[in-house]
Structure formats: structure tokens, C-alpha cells
Image (tube, rainbow, N blue to C red; front, side, top):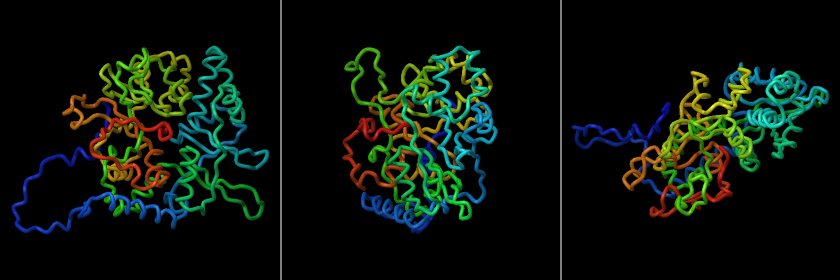
Length: 399
């Protein structure tokens, strides 16, 4: 499996005992006393920092902004995204000189699904040459999927307010708009993503992150497999509900349907025992479309993965025993969009299967917990509860 193991695994290596006596432990990064109170205090401190900083403060030193005109056809827009290594971009209505929403990979997924059901390959290939971005919302209506909200925020808004808006609207990115003082027209300044916001926290709240020592199991961050025994599930029911899964033999379009219907961006690929062997993402589908391989949607996942970009970063996995602090430290080191929670040594000792799918943690899940949509301490559980307890439906978050 092309996987990246949790950084916690590196901490399990035995070290030689020190031969020096009475050595001072001042170099330790762990808090002297690890309690629920220290954890809660760290969350309060992080929120206070976000309330005192603006969205401008989260901007990288150097960045580029891709803005697409709504009159642009979909094929050219898609090429622009891929050539610049981005998966979304603000839309601009040049006729009205105003912001017109966001183009995301999910919009392209909806378009693929629409053509797959309503036209043959030749028709789809011809239409994509002329189909304009301004018509994407009509596709959403025909499919019966929700139209994304027209979110926006001013760059001078606090990071805390921006984060709350992302949480409340279930959005992954927030356009930042200002007004030109001379013309009065809107100006797209940048886009604040969940990843950028969490990376800001990981860089600027180092001391507080070291206090976030409680495990993901205890905090219930993420969506986890239901504990309903397989024998009690109806025939044909997904035993890993509410998580969408696929196997290497699943047709690509079946997964595309999952992306569109459930508004998710990745599906774990598991074997017969539920062990995670890979991850199929919306970007993988876009790669097929970029190659003009619309007919490739009938390929199996196994066949489609052979066309995956060689720079695919791998599947980032963790266990329910990992801490929130460790997760945030990982975000500081590399670009992470989700983590697949799998059974580890602790579950294996109880009769489980190491590597078996246990849950999914998205950046939305992490941000929601850190910002505090749910009160501090309310998610702390007794040690008797297991890591695979199902997350209530209202807490389940799309990947």
C-alpha cells in the first residue's frame, strides 16, 4: 500500500536508557500534567489567538490566485486548474464585474455524472468543448444536488469568524473579497481554505498544540464505522456504514456517483477483510477526464489507478489512539486533506484486524472541534467506550 504512517509510530521505538543520573527533563515537550483541563485550556488559547488575527495573517508569503471568467468553457477551465496544480478557483462574472461563486472538482464530478446518464461519449466530448462555466448551476438543478452557497468574507475579518463560517456552511474554502475604493467594484483578494487555516494554527500555536494530548478515540473527531453487527444488517447493506467504500473491482463510475450523491472527495479502497489498500479521490477522476478518457469511467478502480499521477502523495493513515496534537503537527509538515483511521495494535489485541477501516477524519472534522461548535469537554468520554462507536449523523462530515 502506498501509505504514510502516523508520526506517532515513530515514538514507539525503544530508546536506550540514559546513563546520566539526575538528568533534568527540561527538554521534554509534553506538559507536566496531562489532563482534560490542560487540553481545554489549550483550545481556549487557540481560539483567543484566532479572534485576535485576521484572514490576512494566514496568507502565505507568496501565492498566486487563479480566477476564471464564467464565459470560459469547462475544458479550458479544467486545463487551467490542472496546469496550475489547484483543484478550485473563484468565478468572475465579467459582464456584471462581480464575484460569481467557486469552481470546484465537485462541479466537474456533477458534470461527468450528468453526461454519463444523458448522452453518449461522442456527444459529451463535443459538448465539453463549448459548455460554459456559467451553465454549471443548471446541471446541479437537473441532478437534484444542492447549489453551493455564495460565501464570501472580508480579508480583515478574524480567522475565528472565517472558521465559524466554514463550519456553519460545511464549505472547504472561503473567498475573501474587498471593494475597489475608486470603482466600488468587488475585488477577489484570495481564498482561505481549511488547510491554510489549520496550518496557521499548527505554525503559530506550537505551545498549545503540545497540550492537545487526548486521543482521537476520546474526542470522537471524525466519522466512524457503525458498531451494528453484520448479522443484524440488511442484505446488501454496507458493513462500513456510514463510510462509503469500494474495492479494486468497483467500476469508476460507481465511485463517481458516491462523490456526487454524498458530496465527498475520497473513498477508501478496501480488501475482502476491510483492510485499507488505497484511496480513490475526485482528482483521480479529473485526471481521466483531462486525458479525454470519458469512456474510462467504465474501468475498474484497479485499472484506473494505473493512470494515477506519479506524484500522488500516498494514503495518510492513523489510529484512534493518536492525539489531536500529533495530527496538527502532521498538518504543519505536509499537505494533508484527510486521514484514514485504521485498527492498530490495540484493536488487534482485542480480536481486530490491523489496518482494517475504522473511520475517516477530514479537515472539516478537525476544524469543527478546534473552533468549538461543540462545547469544550463535551466530547470527552469514559475510557470504557470503544473507538468504533458511531458518530451521530449530525456530526458526520463529508470527506
